[in-house]
Image 1: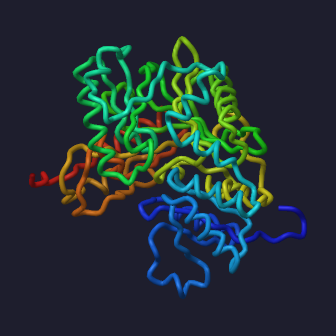
Image 2 (image 1 turned 45 degrees about the vertical axis):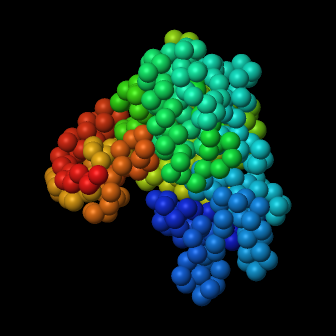
Image 3 (image 1 turned 90 degrees about the vertical axis):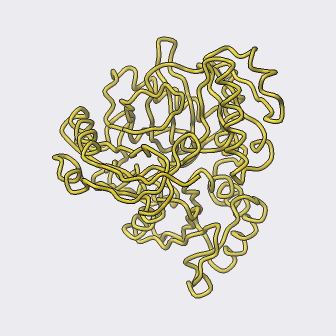
Length: 423
């Protein structure tokens, strides 16, 4: 923020299903920022909230923009943050309409659509797999014989690995296509994304996640996470993230450069970036470059000293506020201490009746927090149909190896009582 200016009002766009609103509001409070929440379901007390909440349609972009514009007439905005992938498009469109700093909506759309993403990167010079777009209305058997197996089938816009399936032969391809079609039929996906699937080469190798911030197209790496559990399919449910990365420094530098190049090709210039990449003997392969920060509660694994948490950095960037200290430099760890998070996978479908062993799980040395994010009595849905985790385990330690061991030991102490659902 320039000298003499006070931070303006911030609008946080958050789906009602998001885990993240509390952490962003806490960060706004620490920074003295007036923040409002825009969500896709009308708050009961919205009319009495003095602008603290407002309703925004995330599916109908033009309607959502008009709702934000109307809100802006009464409560002038200085910045809009789309907290989750679902809200990033309307945030960009509304920011453009109001003359606020933003990424081009076309860049956001390309980053959020797996087929557009592959199309943008195909001729960029970066490693890229063979890919094709298939209509789900076709008989999958017509295409099954022509696939360069193994392949991965992906819905175009779903997140959290929902509907992502590996197929090693024609039989698996046909089954995966039908399964994704069923998943999409139960979502609110519209247009091309509702009736098409991306098919691409399976990319073997080690997978990492990069968390960064873009400032006028320049990438600052905030954290590079190793994913020590193999993600080979047939489904791709993520579990453990640990930082700092144990990869060679030269590889880390190449990962940062690849992410920056991919963001540039997409046209992203500002704000948070969450990238997923795979590393093998043929290079560093971008899997996803999302114009948002890390999902779920995973950001709680990151601390930046006097600069606060990840949400503090994002809000400071959006409002051009001064930072207590410079953000961590490229490829460095957030702090001198290693840290990590485990997204607790759902072991079986059914109704969650009890979680045993919480006290023992929290008592493991290095473990800071164990959060069960699905209430007792809720129905659990496994991947690839499901898109939720049972909860999150957070740990810190002197080394990445210590953190990983603490996360695994803590998870091993938990027992879940799941009642099978009645057919």
